[in-house]
Structure formats: structure tokens, C-alpha cells
Image (cartoon, rainbow, N blue to C red; front, side, top):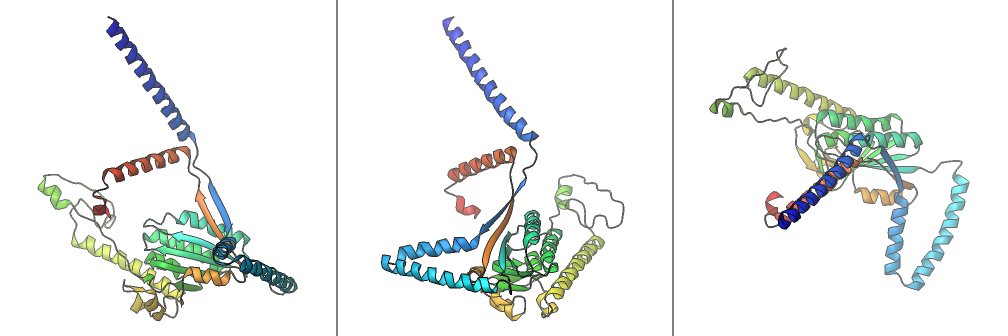
Length: 344
């Protein structure tokens, strides 16, 4: 009897602990579900200050105390001279500011949501003499997403503010649609440029369904409401209509590039091919072979440079989900460390 009593007491304690945990988790989930989506956060930081910090740190490591002391002395003298020159000329020509936006686009181009806020922020404070530099990296994606992204950059041009696009790695397909909007396009020597074409693909499981004696029904109103389908039986008329739609999009893409890059032979470059930076320059797709780093270092000699970044604050439910995802990913990586090269 004593054993049964202790066992029952243990079960009661265990149930109490489980219920308590469930109540806490339920409360957290309930609170998270009631939260509204996090508001965005706009960050404007000085790239000029960061570059200066890097240079100062390098000097401290490489220069002797005497050399560093002399450098600081000379720097103060130069600063006084520049201050006098700036004060006397600021009425004649205001000093330009450079605003840097980073865009690393994915297939669905969801990053355009942040881009539109960043562009709006810049346009609210930028002056005609200022410049916007977009460090662009994208291999393209959905037409409507990258079309909107290009339109966001067009807003800068429409306000007569200089727009420069820098491509250090890749600006292809929809990425190049964005790049060609700029007043000038910079590209690293081995950056991938071009791919002015359109692609669409989908699998068809109709034969597999038939083999398994599974029927699939799809009803539409309108001859071409659905051209190709994953599960139904496709026909030649649907395929032809699908190709026509792709060709229409391609013609729009070609017209857009030709409008913004008037010097290019559009029929020669709109074949879906891509080129590296040097060849892209020969074809007129880019203007200068230069990295964004070198461009910013040069601008920093005479201008103040600022980074503009907009990000969405995640609510409690999203943070909880991310934490769980990271924990799961860590566990999987540890568990599959011997075979992880298979997934690269």
C-alpha cells in the first residue's frame, strides 16, 4: 500500500508539472497571437565614420608612436584648412551626401517591401545634389516582384537624384531589370550580368496519376484560364498559349532595358545569356568596372556617406518560431555532420 501511495503521489506531481508547463506555453502562445505584426525600424548609420574607424585602427597597429603623433598633428592642420574652404564655398555649392541601400534579392523578391520604405526615407531627406548608391545582388525571380523593385528605384530617378547601382557579384534577369534603371552601373570584373530572358517550368504528374488509377478534375471558365497544369493532361493549344505569354513578358523586358540603356543592341543582349563584368561593359550593359568598396572610398574623400536600412520588428510568435527553427537546425546539423556535404 505504501508503494501505491508513493507511486500515486509521484504521478500527481508529474501531472501537476506537465499542466503547469502547458499553461505557461499556452499563455505565451496566446499573448503572441494577440500581438500585432511588429512595426518597422529605420536605421541610418554613418559609413564614413565606420571607414574612419577602420583606418584609425589600422594606423594604431602599423604606425609607431612618433609616426602616429605626427599623423594626428598633420590631420588637425588639414582639418582646419578643409573647414575654412568648406565654410567659404558652402554658399556656392552645398556638400552632397551619399545614401547607400543594400538589396539582396530572393526568388520571390519579398525584399522589395523593405526597399520601398528605404527609398521613401531617402526621398524625404535627399537634396538634388545628393546621390543614392544601391549595392545590388540578385539572380532574379518573379516578374511582378522585380518589376515593382525596379519601379521603386525609378522613383529616385524621377526626383532627379543621381542613382548608381553597384554589382559586386550578380545582377541577372530581374536583378538586371533593377540595375538598368540607374544613371550609372558599376560592376566588379567577374560579376555576373545579363540573363535578359524569361523562364517558366512545372512538372506534370498526369501519367503517374493515370498509372495509379487516380482521376483528376479541373473546371475552368474561359479558354485560357489555365494553360498548363501539374495534374491534368496538357494539350498543344495550352502549351502554345503559355509560350505566347512568356514571349509577351520577354518583349516587355527587352523594351524596358532598351528604354534605360539606349546604347545597347537589345537583340544581341536579350538572348537569355549572361556575361561577366568586363564583357558586359563591352556590350554596354554596365558603365564602369569597379567594386562598390572602391567607389565608396573615393566618395568618402569629399562626401559624407550614410547607410539606410529598414527592417521589420518581429513579434513574439515570430521570435519563438525563429528560436525553435535555429534549435532544430542545430540539432540536425549535429546529427547529420557526417553526411552534410551531400546537401551543399
